[in-house]
Length: 159
Image 1 (cartoon, rainbow, N blue to C red):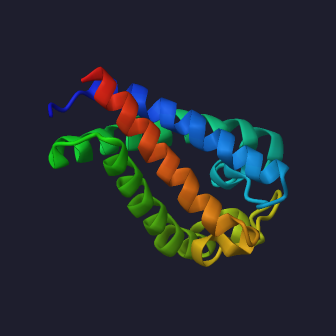
Image 2: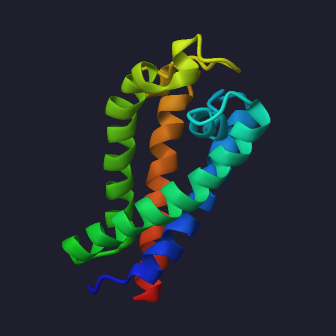
């Protein structure tokens, strides 16, 4: 399977749209109180409105489309497969890394979780994001698995 940057970008955007819809649905249903826009944008500003706008832009454009779209494309290329199962498994590995490593470390690095930096404050997510509600760990994994599934299917259709 060839590496195709353009296909990776489109696949990353498609995966991000689906994953974000799942995340927003989980919030609306009360399964989690994680707000990806505030979490991401809050790293740059203490103004909630600006944080939500910046955070959603970063989530969609930089992280979902560019960083993870290209990273997943590279993994699919390396594995020689962009099938549904491959996408789900890569997404699962990604979700586990985020939940077990990135989220627990966030409290030490995020300015809105440390207090005293001005603006709003955020609770620390903790291991697998459980600090944002009991449904967050499963939502985190399912969201990443869906990202991987959609990214794989779109990538495979384009290369």
